[in-house]
Structures are given as C-alpha cells and as structure tokens.
Image (cartoon, rainbow, N blue to C red):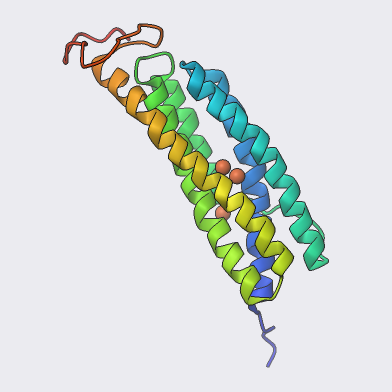
Length: 186
Ligand code: FE
Ligand code: FE
Ligand code: FE
C-alpha cells in the first residue's frame, strides 16, 4: 500500500491553513468596506470587525502552536472569489444609493463562509481532543455570528434607502417618505 493514510488531523491542518489565508484576506476586505461605506454606523461596524479579525488571525496562530505545526497559509479560492465579487459590486454600485446595501451583502457572504469554516474547525478540534483550540475557535465563531447579526440589522436601513434611491445623510425620519420608483441618479 503506497497511498499515505490521511486522517482527520491532516484535514484539520489543511483547513486551518485555508482559514488562515481567508482571515487575513477578510481584514483587507473589511478595511476596504469601511473606506467605502456611506453610513457612519456601517463604517464603524466594519472597522470594529476589522480589529476583531486581526485578533482572530492571532488566535489561528495559537491554534497552529497547539498543533505543534508551522503557521502556513494556503490560497482560499472561495475567499478570493468572494473578494473579487465585492470589488465588482463596489465598481458597479459604489457611491450610489445602493452602495451600502450591496456592501453589506458582500460582507455577509464572507461572514457566512467564515462561520461554515470555523464551525467545522471547532467540531474537528473537539473530536481530536484539542480542547484549547476548541475554545479559541468558539470565541472567533461567536464574533463572526455576532457580526453577521449586526449586518442583518444594519441592512434594514440600507436596503430601504437603496430601494427609495436616497443617499445617506438625507434623514428620512420615520416611515416610508421616499417615493418608490423615483428616478435614481447614478
Ligand atoms: Fe474572521
Ligand atoms: Fe477556503
Ligand atoms: Fe468575520
């Protein structure tokens, strides 16, 4: 039998490298999102999560240490694709009334990828008996979920502004004051 046996420990290490790459990329995506956000609260949310994500990168380095293996990155095709889509959306919708709605949508796609990956890593770490790694991965998973929920909240206002063709800074008070179908300046 020439084929090397691969185990869950191997899968865990390979996936950790993928997430290490993805997390570093997400810091860049969040900074770019913060720069392009129209509303102050959305910019603040992106800046806060960029800081959290830098800390998440450090947690991943600690997980590599727990494994006793070098902290390496492996290109994550998924995160590359999600980042490319974000760039495309920024090009198409940046500085329009739909900018924040589209930015939030891109950011949530990234958060959902992270949630999927950290959920798997957390479960595998438990199966492999790396309890300290479980704790670190749980902490990060909680931050990703919390960010996703915050973005869902912020999307309400952004979506309604995008729908009504209003730009940020025009305080609409309460209720649907904007006329639907108003000509949208591009
Ligand atoms: Fe993250
Ligand atoms: Fe990946
Ligand atoms: Fe995140």
